[in-house]
Image (tube, rainbow, N blue to C red):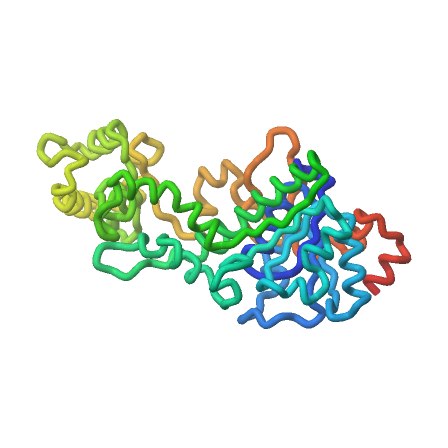
Length: 373
């Protein structure tokens, strides 16, 4: 089930964006087989298998890719696949005998997906790094934070998952479509630094147009504007406001019973501090629940700032089924949603057996037994 039903993908086990990309594709119905190391890699603090949410909906087999017979098996699987995902440093797959030349030689229609931090070439290509380093090089990290404070790390959403996983998925889907039309596969080089920089395109446009001309924390979208900000309430909880457009701004003032004629115009940056002081005092006068009763659901562009626990409990997320239970653990539901080709519900890590997956590659029961032992 799902829009990618029938698509077969081999994933070489990695961390960060590679398993996230594989999860997204599996959530949409692709059959993904994860090839893991025989000996676990040193990935820092280990997680229990059932907590590896991004490993859901696919099977895993362990192969020692330093052994020729394991490489031969991997190539056989690749020969019957639509796509491949790997997230190693440049040159690792080539040294294993599984580089693009070898794999495309066995399967000329293959979409060969590579996700790295710095890309396959360039002076930093072989350097170690993580999300924070990659977004630092794009201007994104420098732009995020409050006035007078250090840049603020935005979790690892921008580099690993936004700039890495999502761009890898987009590239792989494009390459699969191209191969179905032309019969020719290709390498998809998804560098997190490239993807994060691409995400910054509208922000660079704002800079070019003069709408991002002030230092960090003094612009419209980086907490400089009083109308795009979070405010503390009487109970220590927070709410968010984002009425950028004039009509939404007017609705906020109407609901708060503030006469706009008594304060500077919305776009007058010289008046932002005064506005912010007023709203800070106003929102501290009542609890978050009080403000939700007044503002939530209106055109004031308002939402409470929820913890992860509270997010699950919010009525809108409940109504949307935004969280699901997978293997006894609550986690975000697959996205996006499809009106016709609805995917099957995700399955917990370990529930999809290697035999089940290998049958999709046309392997016999005897061959599966030889692989899985």
